[in-house]
Image (tube, rainbow, N blue to C red):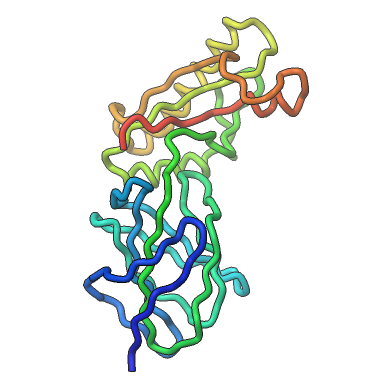
Length: 230
């Protein structure tokens, strides 16, 4: 006999007791069915978001993508603890953990609330020293960004280039603009429309760390992204 329950999740996870979701998948003796909805903190439903459930024991990942209504269905093994992650462009963000009981043929309703960032650093994007040439080990991160932009078809972004304070200020501004342009060019060659991606160099004007240390300088030499339109 099938049972319908609600998982108690912590932090960004809230209960939903009265959700009515058309059930497409079916739970089994070994797999529980998660029927979820993803919202932001204003209560708006979030389409085309990727939620990842990672089994703490096996490290196996189970991914769910929300539909146009912000809803998803996912089958995951019963009797396990899962880390919940939210895909944030080129990285995954850990939010909380949840326990899936050992009940057979069980269906659980979950409501996930997240606050997608509007701007952040693009990790693992590298350039040749003093130049705007992208290093090959940057392509994986940029390809992940392309994948997200192809899913979020209405999103427009600004690629932002930043440097440390070594050298002349005008040279740093020029280099940061050239690097931002290079990232934009890469995205366009991968099929992203020119109108959706702008590029701006900020040089050394927006440090995030102390330029007095090598560690601080490394943090300030970065490529960041700002969401202009959802």
